[in-house]
Amino acid sequence: MNESPPSKDILPRDELVLLSCSEMAAADAAAVAGGTPGAELMEAAGAAVAGAIVEHYQRQPVVVLCGPGNNGGDGFVAARRLRAAGWPVRLALLGTPAALKGDAAHAAGLWKGPVEKISPQLLDGRPLVVDALFGAGLSRPLEGEAADILARTDALGLPVVAVDVPSGLHGDTGEVLGRSVKAALTVTFFRAKPGHFSVAGRHLCGEVRVADIGIPESVLGSIRPQLWTNDPALWSAHLRRDDLADHKYKRGHLTILGGAASTGAARLAALAARRAGAGLVTIAAPTRAVAVYQAAEPGNLVAECDGDEAFGELLADERRNAVLIGPGSGRNERTRQGVLAALRKQRCAVLDADALTLFADRPGDLFEAIGSPVLMTPHDGEFARLFPDLVSMPGKAERTRAASHRSGATILLKGPDTVIAGPDGRAIVNVHAPPRLATAGAGDVLAGIAAGLMAQGLAPLAAGAAAAWLHGECAYRFGKPGMIAEDLIDRLPDALETAMN
Image (cartoon, rainbow, N blue to C red; front, top):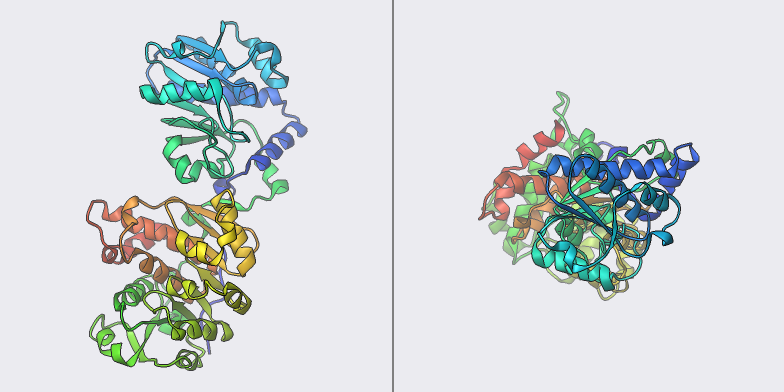
């Protein structure tokens, strides 16, 4: 009988929420409907930008580039506040003051200095540039005077503080529309947006500060956001603590389908799963490779498993509550049948690498078989083989959500901006990962951590998020060049301790 605990899902935290552009507009509207004037919100936003500049930089000449909308209104407020603090400020507007509307017009009316036109001469003397041209909701490519001044700013290497996002960076998709500018500091409001944590966003935004501008936290209740940044607060309560009543089967029994050739992949995954807390890990190996697995790590159990049906027979033992298939298993019928057998047996499963690629010709066969908790961990190439029509969908979070909804599995789409998404639309963005994770075997370790956590009862979304964060934490702890996949496993106990505390 399976004695592992029931599935444990993420614990959503309001402070980790990411808001889309439409959700942020809804938050603004809810605050105004609740009695906070829009002009007051804009004043607070501009004040936050000015305050961040004063805190971050020594007094110096500043050029504030204002756009024709509310982002420009924030820039007018920031310019007025900086001038009041004794900073030398020039302000330039894309368009004319007469064309401004609403709160932006009100903010512009409070600025008593000259309003200049956008021109390259503004950058003479190498000033600090405040980019308040366009916010996160820009829907068309940045071009003309705005694009030219930002290109010139980049070419000169001037320090830039961006309001909301660097102009041209889309807040939802994280894609650059036309062109953008590299900021040292980005000040956004109430909650960050998905675009801040895309690959382009991480390159362009610099340090991201989220300012409180008076929008009440209660507005999140009506918005019901479903996207979070990854943090142990979402899942650490489910990491297994010491219990005097524990025994190994309570911690779950993971079975990994090992291959005959690339044996190192399954071994790395098995070690990672054991370090992550799985009570037992068995590698189901072809007879000709059993000796290789047995001669390796003594704590890994090894079972002979030949033929297309053997894996299913192994899973007749219900204590084998979790499976991992893909790392080194081989692109063959044995792997395909192993996947289908695990899904027929309703085991919680992590599917990676070969287990995904094998279904590229008929992905529907895989999706139709999914009825138990399943986590898929593709990289971009594997994702494209299973979901070729989704590759061009803008926004990594939306691509991953769509794939999860279609397949019925939780999807962990790997990369520097890893996204973990469930079939119900909830998603988590993980950026707790250094570039040195780009090394052979690191993906096998990630899959092993996730499978080990699922064996202990974590739901796929929680297990995927925890594995991604712990994986990155292990790499950060190594902290120097030369890291290889084996180094990650050695640091997993410390990473777990950090997450639990």
